Amino acid sequence: MRLLVSDAVFSIAANYTINELTLWEHTGFTTIAYTNNPVSMKYRGLFELSKREELKEGNYQYKLTYHSKKLFDSIDEAKNKWLKKYA
Image (tube, rainbow, N blue to C red; front, side):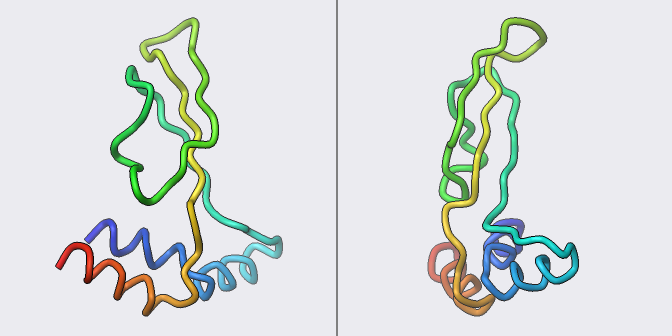
């Protein structure tokens, strides 16, 4: 179910609503993951790795920046994609 919600958030309709509420344009979503692996499997498929930094200090080896791959035209399109893939 988590992926369905994530896919629905990546729709143009949801993005328009977010833009209206925040009063600035969002072109996608970005998240950061701290890990000891060079990639995070958690974000595979939903996000694209946009930056990888090796950390010199702390408990983690990498700081990974991910950005959403695409926006769906509608929430229904996102839901149908999710159903086709996971149902």
